[in-house]
Amino acid sequence: MRTVLSLCLLAFASPVLADSVSGSCERDGKRLVFTDGIAFQDARDAQGVVTTTIYLTAKPLDRAALARCAECAAAPGESTFVSPRGDIVEAQRAATAAGWMEIAHTGGELDMATIVNIMYLAGDGTLTGLDGGNGRVEFTTKSASRMAGKVLTEAREAPMNETDMQCDVTFDLAVGWPKR
Image (cartoon, rainbow, N blue to C red):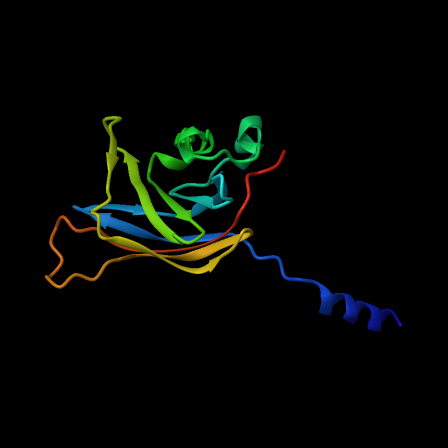
């Protein structure tokens, strides 16, 4: 009887997917390797359209520190410009100094993704951008609970030149702000 019950429980148990991030972007000889990430609902407009922000980072994020941001745990406002979440992620220099990428996905009729920033902190302390303007995001999963896909380099008719960015990054992230 226990065996039958155990098998039934296993059959109905849904698998828990672990977050994963891997890959890199390179431009002008600078390579950023991404190993961690977070996805969260960052805005909801008056029509209910949600913007989900995705951060990919070079080093692990301190989720316990993110969870301590009480304002970040609140329901998203109407605009990402007034959201504190991105600033809190970017302030984690242990995770972001060697590189981070910010992606915004706006749902609804637009259903579009934008690479907002690809940044790193240079050795002299200067915040430096890496985006060559030729990256694109392809999603395999877009839902309120999970965002998964790739950041790739746009194919160009002309050969790539030294100022073009080269990216090959995959991500699979649960959507949600860390809880205390």
